[in-house]
Length: 113
Length: 110
Image (cartoon, rainbow over all chains, first blue to last red; front, top):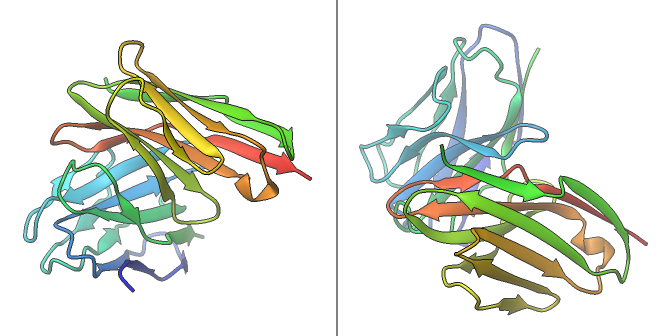
């Protein structure tokens, strides 16, 4: 079945450690996105990629990094520079950037102890 | 600054009630407005609205957009416990990212 797979679903890390969240899609979509969701807040855009080998900062990119070496894959690294990394992270894709409907993965919940 | 505001932030209703969720937006170069339902993890797509005054329906859910007053509503009739979720509204600009509201938490009691 076509869709977006995020892993791991749950992740615990100590402060000061970098962690990488995986996002893979088999929808043949050009655009991919990473959002962060905190309680009582909407989804906030961290990074997005319009096409392979290209990515742009979103509204809250500080402390995060991404890569887009393959069309299907858009991993997110939460670095030790991110001051408040505990959150729910959602990966999404769309056929083209700004094309409207996003398809979401199941999310990854990161807890930093 | 682009923004999307949803109201109410949360509400509790009984099964069978009808609810109306509101979404107002201020974005430049507005293209479309989207509604999503988020139950536990991944938001699932409900509607995309691009034209004013044309209602979209899917079962007990319906939505309409007013581009003059810059808002949209999502109606749910004869609510069921399975409708309990966070409902997200997002405004899409041409060639740009989606701007999400904070969501409305709906709880339907049996």
